[in-house]
Image (cartoon, protein in one colour):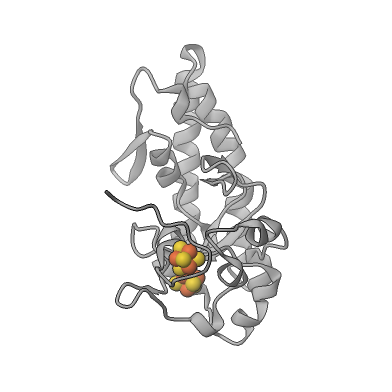
Length: 233
Ligand code: SF4
Ligand code: SF4
């Protein structure tokens, strides 16, 4: 019979590091200033994007932008976690949330969760040429817009209009990214920090498949979308 072990101190098992990298707070600014963390290692979760809530364990739209350490590829596991020896490769310079995490007692982490979060505008210099592109995507392709059209997608009388609006949104998002890359020449790693995940990937998360025709991202909408797969931030 398997014995349930209740932890009362950290035994460095590393399980918390496999559940996702930490969000960054103002207290972590020095890690960026001293180059212990650089933008290539970060991903932006834009306001309104669904993330797992610490309190409910369910996906809920973020109330504000989050900049966090990326996972490895498509995995949740933090980029800096090393399986061999269950080791954090930046342990001496790990962010605030990691230093507060005690899986057996989460009060310290909950006290800082969602507060004093760093955003891209705290990290990127104000006159950096990427800033107008970031603002363009945030203004034209907001998650709030996406959620409204997703809701409309589930209503028979507004479905076609919603498909048109969502198609326009995902392609505007892709076009601004392409223009930024063409003008400023940066890597995919930086794209995820500058702009977060493309809208079509977020649509996929909500159960709306997409495909490409002649360079245009198109929605593959089935007649009956599950209402539980849709969220309205
Ligand atoms: S805090 Fe993380 S590393 Fe420590 S015991 Fe809990 S899950 Fe394991
Ligand atoms: S930075 Fe280190 S301690 Fe924090 S989640 Fe990543 S591997 Fe774990």
